[in-house]
Image (cartoon, rainbow, N blue to C red; front, side):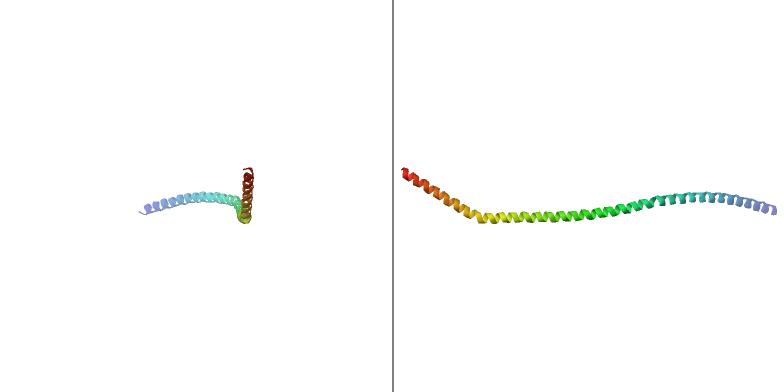
Length: 128
């Protein structure tokens, strides 16, 4: 029985040795894979930093352009309001001029028409 135990111990030790060799082989492969992943991450980081820098510059430029557009829109709004005020002033001036001139002109035209009618009537009476 002792021989059987000894054989079992030898088989167990050999199996453990084979398992350890296999685990060492797996760990070496894992180490190689991790090294490749580390190199890829370093390359990705090295390439990503300029991209992020450019993105920051682009974002700043977009912000400046947006602010300039906002300023231009405000200027256009104020210009439109000024033009509207000028148009309102012109309409008011036209109305005032019309109110002041229309009545005297109509009276003058009425008087002139009455004078012409009077002259026609006078000439018509003289001929008759």
